[in-house]
Length: 150
Image 1 (cartoon, rainbow, N blue to C red):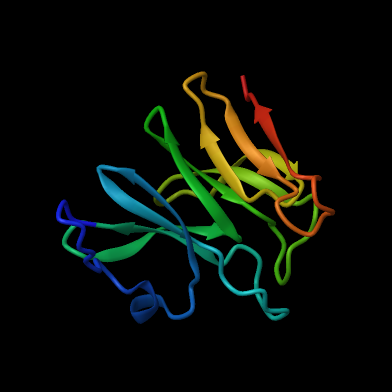
Image 2: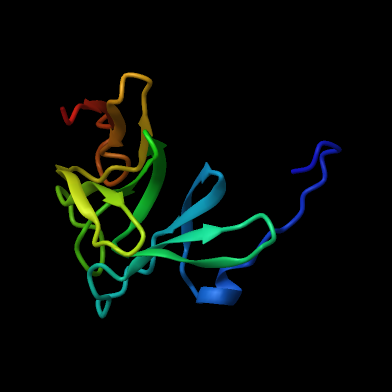
């Protein structure tokens, strides 16, 4: 959105990568976009990405090997992704994870075993704040959990 309230498209992710289902965005000098992918039984685990989007509209794959990304966050110069589920196909309760994402490196699992997480932020205290049970549970079962890794 521009200061005058108008909206301008920077890039059409689907035009570049097909039905990628972009679901997460973070900014750290440039924009980073994570994707959900499809809930396809023929899906391969770890075939989703984080894309780097430059202000000129150029988009490229920044990192691969992710699954069902619903949130991205930067802390201390490091990029983290929240994977709603790490299995191929549909969502698998209890398989959510927070992973560290680095270009040219495999993702590194920081936290695993999350129950259908749907959002993540990193607090000033360095802790991860994650919403769990975001769907598929009775009303009122959702919760925010604080996760420390040190």
